[in-house]
Length: 268
Image 1 (cartoon, helix red, strand yellow):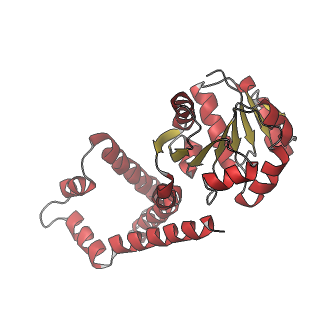
Image 2 (cartoon, rainbow, N blue to C red; image 1 turned 135 degrees about the vertical axis):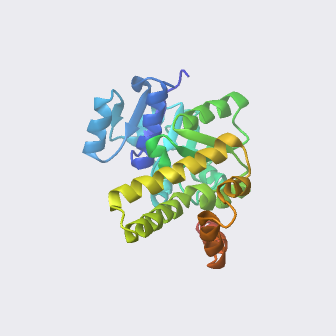
């Protein structure tokens, strides 16, 4: 990919994307430029060979693909600052919740190439799940280039924009639910006498392995569950308790609340 990729903002997600790009050798470090207010972040990036600056306009001028990895509340301010400096054919990637393609185009004051993306925090360990929505101005080759960027630190799915609120609940926010699940399993193991560090490792690896089985076997999660449940055994006893205490309905209700909140944020 012979492109200059720019980042305005270098928080956790911006760093994860840059790390994935460098690790996959999609482009070299000298083809990445970033701006940030943090001297520490700029220095760390500079040590990796990335071009750094505090001038957002400089990043805008040089970027073929520009990632806005900033907080939603300052999107309009940053776009107002850079909109007259971007290249005509630049691809703008947004990663903020509640910022739809239409609002981004309106902020720039014209039709620009926009990709709305929703990555999640496991991107920090190379296991991200990202949904993207490209607008109609991108070519097939340009969409492929964006997919390669997000594939460099996990997996990516192209979805319709109407599904982005559901994406927020099923992958964007869901690591938090899984962390709570792991913590609860570890607490139970500690209650049974296991050291906490060991309990966290065992619970986390069990979740990791189970998720990998879903992805790699292609089998229905229910079928994989049935494989573990021996007649009159320990697992089906635990499953029965989960059903009795509303495990499924609790997860579904939580995700519906998350989706509802995402919709409300989009309307602001």
